[in-house]
Amino acid sequence: MELKKEISGNKTKFTVAGEMSVEEAQAFTDALMNSIAKKKPELEIDLSDCEYMCSNGLGALAAALMVARSRGGDLVLTAVSNNVKKLLDITTLSTIINIKKK
Image (cartoon, rainbow, N blue to C red; front, side):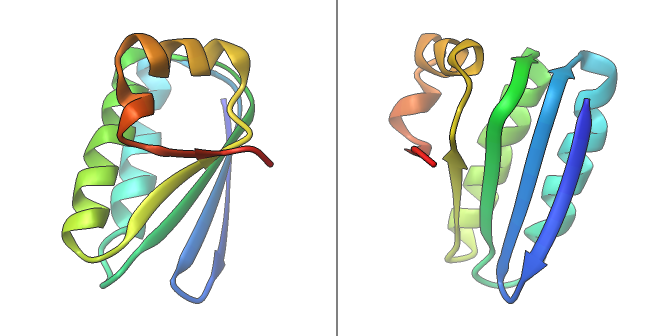
């Protein structure tokens, strides 16, 4: 997995590429949680090149969403790959996380 991070004001954009395994999900979780430590965090996560995401990665998204919203912010997914979209649909996370096309 390759993880890139860009910061612009309150907005932090992550780009995830490749496959997110259980071993790599902790680094993803840590990066998300560090980015939502401020008030009104706005996270954008580009998953267009993420071919696979393990359940720990999905858990990281759900946890980051809850914390961001509790601080007056939000988390948005953009350009979600078909494989990850299927997982989001199966787990019903797609009903609570904003998903935008790029």
